[in-house]
Image (cartoon, rainbow, N blue to C red):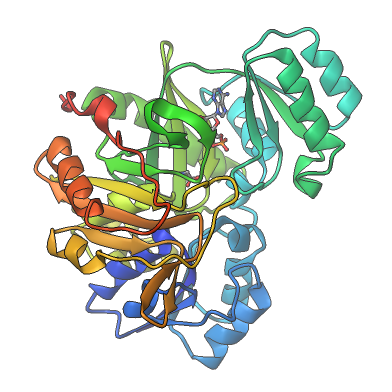
Length: 426
Ligand code: AMP
Ligand code: GLY
């Protein structure tokens, strides 16, 4: 099969690497791709992941047999609908089902209607009403823009003043355009966060090993929020008991709720959980693989990813056995100095081969080919993933390999997974 993957980050590099292992995949294309992906697939940098029409044209022109639409934007823009309408099989939810991520109000209403545990919240489409409501509340409190906002549409405010500023920013400042036209103000949940990615074909939902990511820039979960500084799987917090409870109280009810609403969700459903004293609650749904969780989860997949993608599209997931390694995986992100603020690009990267020789897989997120090798070209530059018999071993190996890589200003967290190293799933 000739397969096209849409997207160009570390997550897409992990997806392409797995697809490359499949005997079904004879040719692999990626749009736009990146310099790392270009080592294993033919990249089409001029086709952007948000340009649905260009993606359909590319798929037609190249006569691809299957498209995997990985990022949130094209899914919300109806990329899968457009490809399927053109007769091109595609993996990912259609635009309606992608609202699970694209509208936080849509998914919040769904959770409320079907009794799925989540933070209590109120919805506002007028700034004055939102501000008046805040005056009756106590901090900490969470303000969210309704739509996609590059992962930056959420403010966990530690004072009411901060929450007011967030509301004004979102609703008046126009910082998020249409995404901020409506906001949610919700209760601040306390607990640890776990990500459960699930393959879902609209009939059956199959959870992958649970993972955890590290959103803050600096050690000890301090500093600004980022796209993710590292991840590991399986999560030691997600015990078999908790998995059973989550399946019963959240995953299956979510599947049934989507069905009752006539959403045929085919793709990856990302369930972000907060493990509160009252039990697991949903922080958010995404309609896609997580980044960087995927860089820690997919390396553990033993089954053929291409077979799974096809089975999801054809709604045959219920008849599939998906096998996972019993190892652990850790991914350490190497970022440009200054990220998530302003940073410099074009720095020469050294040590990639040494890191691979140390047993790690290096996923590229923001790199380019310079005249003398790879150079930095983004905030998050690389994700270094290693496996191990235990989480500590995986972490140790990932850091050992990451230590071989260098570029000027390179920043990584030194505590990926460390808070949970001592725990073992029981
Ligand atoms: P989201 O974009 O919905 O993933 O939110 C980003 C991050 O904000 C989450 O990963 C949580 O750390 C935090 N967050 C979102 N909603 C809440 C909430 N209701 N209570 C506490 N933290 C939250
Ligand atoms: N790691 C968070 C996300 O993919 O949204």
